[in-house]
Image 1: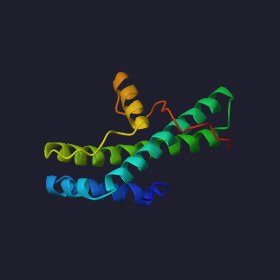
Image 2: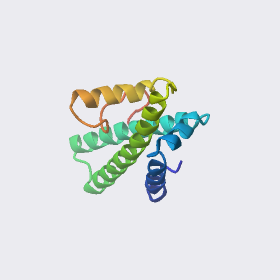
Image 3: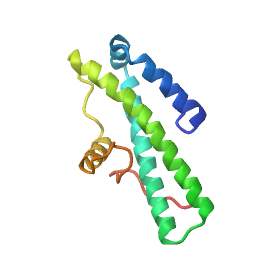
Length: 140
């Protein structure tokens, strides 16, 4: 997937979301080998990106970083949130259709579970939060 190219990723997910609105299409996606796991992998990457960008913004605020850097990091954070919302919708639809037909797609990866649990505890959609495993601060 083109998760690093917003002009492709979000419209592509819009099309996929429309396709999986129909239960039979969602079931086809659930039974294709590797498709659902690939989506979950991209979901993990997006959660990690949110975590890293959030930490970077916090560090910029603490160090009185430049406004240009903060704007770019905020733009990346908002883009990743939009991407994650779209992908979460697709994954949820496919999961629900599969569950109704007794298809077990496997447990969610631990980073997604942790982020979802934290967001639920905060009463929010699982978009931003501290995600365990795989995110360090990066140097810019």
